[in-house]
Length: 161
Length: 198
Image 1 (cartoon, helix red, strand yellow):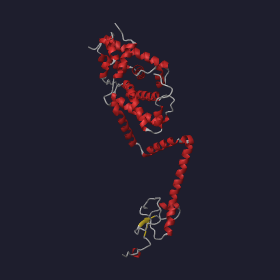
Image 2 (cartoon, rainbow over the protein chains, first blue to last red):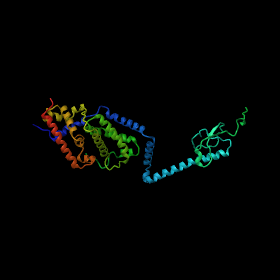
Image 3 (tube, rainbow over the protein chains, first blue to last red):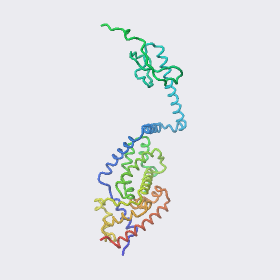
Image 4 (tube, each protein chain N blue to C red):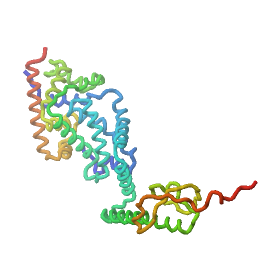
């Protein structure tokens, strides 16, 4: 009685090459791959997406060959320090602007936030919350107080046609 | 299958590393059919194969920046595939799902198919589809590592040297695994020949 030898088994196994996925599978595979990638990206936190983009940008610039990672980290920290200093100096500038211009009121969006727009100008004649700027730079966290604009409404120039 | 010294996928790999996603798409299109065969014959389940293939390419896309070209992309992607499939099979355990698809209709005109069915051999005595089913059974009785070697050597036609690179074992280990797996398959199929299903 004949037995299966190695070549017979090998030939039978080669037939398994013909076992195929459903028709159209390979055509749709790439679309499915893209869809899954998009889904995964949407689930990622924003900081990770930013980090990956930054990494891609850096690799395009070939920054690692120019500077080591510790240097890059030091540079990022230095930039962060400079930016934070600028932000914390902002209340001081706002105070100077307020003192020199009596008819100035704080910007409309000054409530509880800082922004980088010039604090000068915008003669809005309403009651606006402004910050109390007594004491050191840390006092910008003091509760807000309300002041009246120094120019009464009746002093406004009238329009003549 | 000997690979030339220069990797034929080198250009696509470089473009992908530079951020060109369409270059990776080309690699996906190129390797999906081949990797499907590899993973499918190791898992014997289409759904598992599909999920694994998606994970394999996703992992490869994330890791391709770190690919330095010490091996060919072909070897690299096959290594990822085999390792991920073996890990998956370990997690899945011995849950055996015989869901291998029917042999493609085009096989009926294939020279090799005709040869197998026409020659005077034990194959002719048995119904081929039943034999294929038994062969699949026998494949699934092999250990995952042995099945991987059988798949790469017999089904995918890879040389021993390439398999040893992919599995990171010696060629001797590949040969001994093949020998052992062939003996096991032979035993299972002989048993079927002696006691065919009526």
